[in-house]
Length: 180
View 1 (cartoon, rainbow, N blue to C red):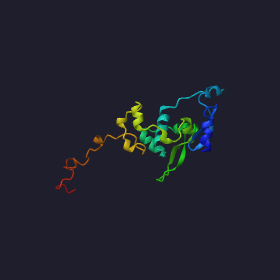
View 2: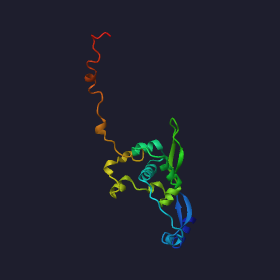
View 3: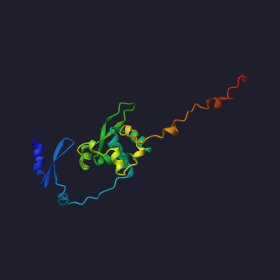
View 4: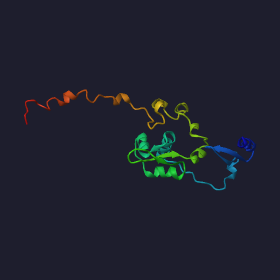
């Protein structure tokens, strides 16, 4: 209650009391932040691989490198994760209890802070992303979103019965009259 009261009191000042991930801090008011910048920082764009990797970690965490590669459909260099960890947006979040015990990656409080999010549930849903035209929501399976599989698999193509023509394939390979 005290913090909420302070937050309201500071809301009209040059600094604001902000709660991010259940932690309180004072921040420069957004309308004054441009005046506070004395040093020009060079902003580097993240590579497409880094953006995709970050999105996968955000929506599927905790997730291993192999799972990220499976979702993306391609392998990626170690520097992709290094860049995200250098920005302190991603960190190792323990090990998965499977053979080899691979490292799982999760987002950090700095990620939430940078994108001005209170919690991960503040992120847009698949439907919201589709409505904004940012993704083709018809290719996303809502039921499995966030479980390690991002896109619907084309089941029609994968349901081919591999045993349907086994008799034809084996005919003539075992000739009963062949005694060798």
